[in-house]
Image (cartoon, rainbow, N blue to C red):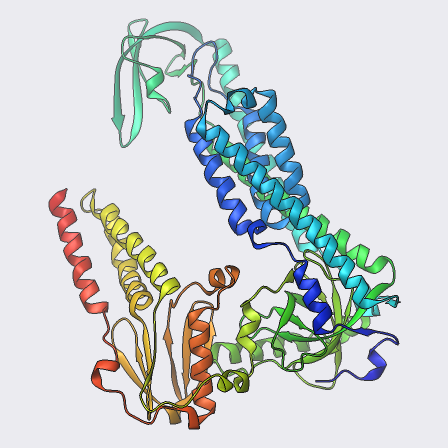
Length: 606
């Protein structure tokens, strides 16, 4: 879909494949991706916290509300999130964490504690990854400016009225309000205890027993001839026979070492603070980047764009890549309207979107077209951009769209591969006399094994306490789990002369070529659309997202591509009919029997 010449600013440079390759070569290395750095940091942090000694609760040092500890938890959780989304803020969070660690003398004991040493090494690895990502973004920006040349243009009028960050800021206000309410409730609990304790009698008692009541630890204390029972989170701090201090006011009593329980409100305050500050940072960052985009004339690049068929992501291609074979970058975007146009046409958009959603759900929507576009702004990892192109719904109206997520470079085998033309895929396929078969492998079987472990553990957890409401949960979830496990481990599609044999968890379905309308890969499944009938779907078929991130071509995506080629190119279909042995065997029934046997074994063992 070519863009009219009047919408291409004079002197706009075409972003060609050779320049795009240089830009991609400057992208952050794979080792610096948060997918690698973040798990290392989380694992070492959990290990270090688990190994850290816990100070006992005593009358001299009671276990009350540790505001410094709660603040540290907020910073740590935010830092983990920012490692993924906000590298600069993540560096600040790591710096604050490591500074606090140094103040407490943590570095001196690091060599003697493997968990502490592992955390410091993971923090260094994460810091190196963050610095590398920021440096790579700077190199990409410089190469984008080189490709754009000296020409700079102001944003189109519609893009100048586009605002980013409003929703994030509203959510931030609500969540921080929740956090403030949690803090207020904690203070209410503390004040209530202190007022009551000031008027109560302070007694010394002896621990006479420790017991459990519905998994709640109870400590019994005899003081002044009476026996008092207290719930405790640390029974090991109160051995039988030890002396403890209590405060008593009539029927009310409390341990001085564990004066009150405000954990629920403390967790609410931490959760609200983390979520609220995360949204606040996103909103402020989005608004700041949007303002920077509008502040001055921007470099412009002549490119091609296309929306992803599954998730609406915008993919950008080089101007000399008319087939859209090699994506450069991607982001999510929204339409920008001048205020007057927004008011006039605001009622039509929901109808268009509803029709589009209906087509997507039915599997009838055609692949979005490749469109000529002008990209405003120097793209780099984390940047904000805007572009002008024809609306992909028609070829009448030119639209302006602004990014609402940060720009990300396209790696090898990323989602843009899902839009490759059938002719290119067909060129790599040769006719065969025998049937063609695609079946679960690597990623799909890993998903299946993981779900199988969840299934086995869920059966054990639901049955270990005897008859309870957990059995209802098991009855509801087990059929889905068995279906998902069986599909992920052994899904199979066989193409022969007359159609497809689709093997799912419970049966093998025959789908003739003359009734197939489409073949799509969406999220974690393969869908075969049928005329005047419901679709045949296999799910899950692997974790395509992870395979993309690892630089591999997802097997299920490739399967859907080749099936689509056979649908559109009858001359490539097999010449023979598939024998019974090639049609597949569903494993749902035997897996269900094995699950039942496992349940019986659990009941017998317990």
